[in-house]
Image (cartoon, rainbow, N blue to C red):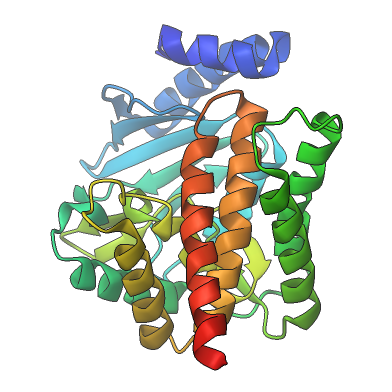
Length: 305
């Protein structure tokens, strides 16, 4: 059932253990199909997790999701439990040990980008985010923003001779700004961690609903940034779009505009660092956004003088 391209992806990422996981996943899917009397459809074309639509024996539409058993996928198990009922896709059943999640199938499943009006998108984003965010549990295994920021240190370790593709001044500035933000942070929340257009889908039964939470502890401003990294290149004035997004979200959610754009710069650089780990050229997107965030930061400084 698992397509060849996905098997090759797992092998490329995890070597022989990836191949072994695919074989085990096939057996798990077969057992789950028999146990729950499922009818499977055609798998979705995704990169890092295997996701396939299914129909339960009572006719209910569902989705089965499986992922290589790394820390990120395990965090999703925990995040789905914590966010259940709060504008998050409904969990029908799951087995953390076997590595599968049975979720409600969001239908028709239009992504937030399906809407044409940017203000309407931002209002929906704010509504979903407001329902999701809450104080973290006293005991948890979720990473925090500081742990994520270690991606910049890893970048330095890989390119300690200065041969990396990212400008040194941007790396240094992100390191410094991260330190300032983290040392002055106050209210921490359990965040989605990857809340962007394609992770907010429309359901006839529940309205706009979030999917694929990573689970992250940090300030609420940080959870607005991933949205701003997407769908900006076709806009006639990307800087104005970013300014509008940042200011509108700050207003709708009563957030600090200054901290939001500062986190925006840091996360954009961090995103570029992560992209270099994957070996592609997607880091250019992160750096382009970082440069625009840098301009917004400079504007704010000039306005305060």
